[in-house]
Amino acid sequence: MNTVSDELLHELMGIVREAAAGEILPRFRSVTSDSIRAKTAADDIVTDADIASERVISERLKTRLPGITVIGEEAVSEDACILDTLDKADLAAVIDPVDGTWHFAHGTPMFGSILAIVSAGKTIAGIIHYPVLDDFLVARPGQGAWHVAADGARTRLSVAAPTPVNEMHGFIPLHMFGQDFRTELAPRVLKFLRVTTWRCSAWEYRMLATGAMSFCLNESLKPWDHAAGVLIHTEAGGFAATLAGETYRPTMTTGHLLTAPDETCWNQVRDALTSDP
Picture 1: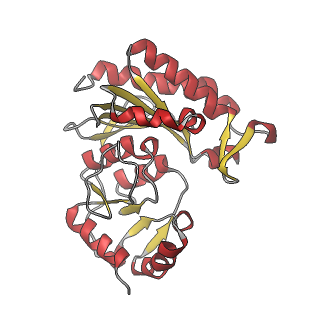
Picture 2: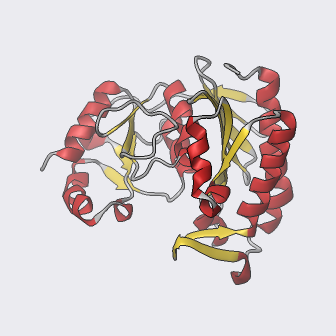
């Protein structure tokens, strides 16, 4: 499969929306301590909603697209070898069923469901659903990035206009970087007007693709966080590459991903982040 048709995109959105309605929203603000488990760290958690919604989405995708390889964040957490199948798959679905689980578990609405369809190592559809708002960001290569409201109304997305570094707003999760790099980065973020982190890729990509924020530096390259978001950001006019200058691919597992409004801004942000004040 090289492209995702309008009909299939609509079906995929429906699968994600139904999982939210059936498995995520009924558990929102009803999370109890026995339904939360730690994964890699005390603040890296999983809930019953993550597991149940990923199972539903996976089953529906396998029925709709027989033979598809499904790579879910929670499945990879249980068996890391599943991630290795992405590089070899002719067609794959990459799922983050509840991105922003920390927010979800603590009763705040800043979470989303992310689905990327990847064909031969290239993202051919990116879908981010925001269950509380019941709206979407969607993109396909060469067809622009779109906000789809709960009633189906569509608005084309556009990243922020280029501005000088000292007027830029961006996302940098300082706490996630290694100690040495974090120590170098900390004084450099003062070059920007504002730097924050929202602990949720779904919402950070929303802010980038709608022009509310200018840039984002990510510590890791987990495909369920970025495969859909980078396509949406790029189709909204943005530019994404690792700090080493490599064009992003969903099969990448190492490097620090930097997104910005265009390539010129990207170079300016990278220079600001890699040089002393």
